[in-house]
Amino acid sequence: MNFPNYRPRRLRGSETLRRMVTETTLSVDNLILPLFVTYEKNTKKPIGSMPGHFQLSVDNLAEEAREIASLGIPGVILFGIPETKDEVGTSAFDEDGPVQSAIKAIKDAAPELCVITDVCMCEYTSHGHCGIIKDGDVLNDATLELLSQEALSHVEAGADMVAPSDMMDGRIGAIRSTLDREGFTNIPIMSYAAKYASAYYGPFREAAESTPEFGDRRSYQMDPANSDEAIREARLDIAEGADMIMVKPALPYLDIIRRLKDEFDYPIAAYNVSGEYSMIKAAEEKGWIDGERTMMETLLSIKRAGANTIITYFAKDAAKVLNK
Image (cartoon, rainbow, N blue to C red; front, side, top):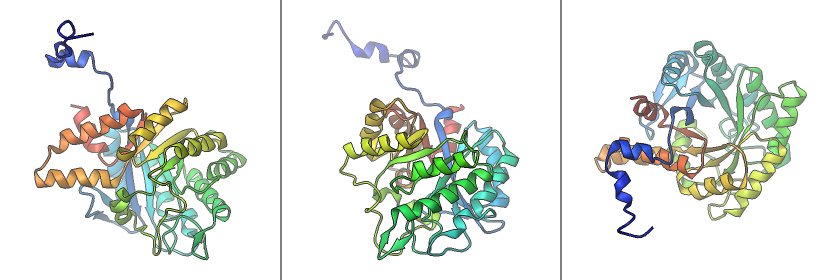
């Protein structure tokens, strides 16, 4: 394949030719939209660092759910903002909590939507960490019971899938065992298998009101320098019963998505996180980039790296482009 006999530009000369040889396609079916649900009533509170996103009260979810479904987006993932927080995050498994109530509201309004729930303690603990604290450290094994209770409460409320994001060792097995024991053997688990201790989460912490009161999460989230460790984490989670494995964030870790895809014959999810979203929105607002084209190129890169599912704050915007 040497020039001039081979000229790659021959197959780029028209839109039709380019379509015919496209190697990667992005579909609305690949998108999942995160939603932030607050305990408050009649609330649609803008998230300053994430234009176009809101803290929504349960009574405002029906309209939102119907719009999401009308765009063909197959699912949502829920994050809760509770009324009260304590040292052990007991409101995480309150049957009348914001996530539990939101599941029912969404299912009533748009039963075709797949409702996934984030399972973690950071939004519910007064200290903002992902588990029980003792002497300034998160207790791994003691936290597993709380995560299992939270996951069970979501499933009992009608969740279609749970997604543990805490990065405690053994939490997939603990949750799987609890769900199976209670008769929920058909509920899948999407594991945040490779969740990195990333600076890209900043806007999310405003949205979910989950900034740690002290320290950081580097003792349980992954070191951004590590790649082989992601393989070990994913292998452990699969062995414990995960049905999907996730990489978070997406853009700085496209190589990890590719490695997991090559290593495991498993569905791969990637989380196009808040910082990735906000940077594009901010640059678009400044007039520095074409926001729509950058959005689509970004999502396509995640799909090309090997993700089957992309959790993204761009889901509605991208769906409108894809549905044209």
